[in-house]
Length: 209
Image 1 (tube, helix red, strand yellow):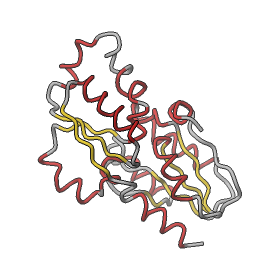
Image 2 (tube, rainbow, N blue to C red):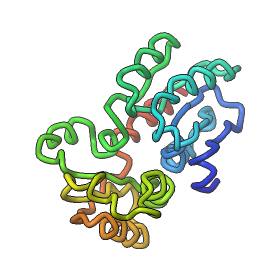
Image 3 (cartoon, rainbow, N blue to C red):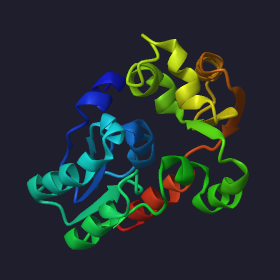
Image 4 (tube, one colour):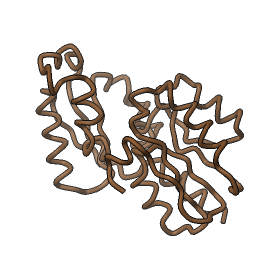
């Protein structure tokens, strides 16, 4: 499992579990760590790059649920992720539970804590472990900054800092995140979050074995 595959293709489920976690490829590594002790939980991830086209997330989720068979329960490991509430509506239609919150930055930090400080951090640009590793694929190249660095001010002129929400203690990732901040000409802040609200959500699935 490599980040490029998780970005473009996703991850198909393996095993014969009774619960399927259907999530974003950007969360695959974290969910695998959290589910490794539970034999009854399988993981399927949709391509992480769907986040650059949020209008495609709901159709992809509906298609994946339609193709899933043999599971007693499907849990949706997505937040709203830019769908404007459409994903939550689809989850209700499909009878699925899903992670609460607007996006992964919120539930990694803890949604309540994130929202409490949102008014003071509206000029912050956030990255997670996955997005630090895939910065070029998600930010630099899609925005054309590799070809036209002069567009930096158009995209990031109103941002003041880059907040790296670290899920792990990884010196190399921190250095890479600092480099991302330099490339965007933003101040840098590292904030260790661990897995945030994702951890208790997955643990709750495990307790239902």
